[in-house]
Amino acid sequence: MIVDLAIIGGTGLYDFPGLHKVDKQVVATPYGAASDAIVVGELAGKRVAFLARHASGHSIAPHRINYRANIWTLHHLGARQVLGINAVGGIRADMGPQALVLPDQIIDYTHGRIASFCDADDAKVEHVDFTEPYSADLRRRVLASARQAGMVVVDGGCYGATQGPRLETRAEIARMRRDGCDLVGMTGMPEAVLARELKLEYACLAVVANWAAGCPEGAAAPEISLPEIFAHLDAATARIPALIAALLA
Ligand code: HPA
Image (cartoon, rainbow, N blue to C red):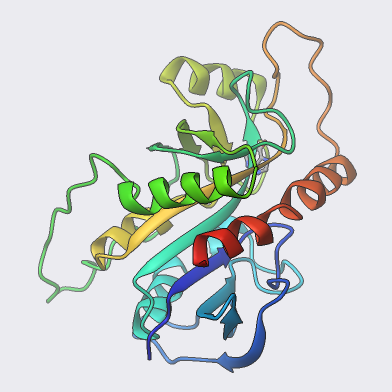
């Protein structure tokens, strides 16, 4: 089967509007079960696979997601290009709530997650190049599609991946800012590196749900409220189908 694009939906995106003629695929993997059935269907005349990272109903916390089963399943179904959509907190001044950002770097602060397919006693050990963690080609095409759709997507930024599920402290975000992080999220890793190990073209479209703890810098930082997070996510996520339609055109 050829899948033109796989989309992994994050918080606030549990199915993909406009995907039709759908078929739900559940695949047995060597790593256990993926987060949910993969919904394969047509969008803008192309074959698209969609996976809800947290499962429909948001029942799987970031640190409990079976990232290996998710990525392995999409690869197995024939996907070679994967766009991960990830809710994040904004750290950099131009990355406030409802911004869409295409990061170009990652700092990984997660722990205890299985972050490689080279994890069995008999597995061949590979040290994949991760200098540029995202596919330059997929990033370029997403940015061009955004321009074509008349949409603002911030080009570049460093995604700091935290363990969650709690949000960060003010001091943690201050440290992440000093480290060079522009965004903070809980699901960007190990998804990106597992995609690299399977030679998938992978990019992350980050959807800013809230200011990260203590941000914006210098302002009276608002308390982070869940209803507000979901309202921002709904507003920002509503712009994504037009972007994907332009990407597939
Ligand atoms: N921190 C970490 N992950 C997130 C946040 C945040 O502030 N907002 C949405 N996902």
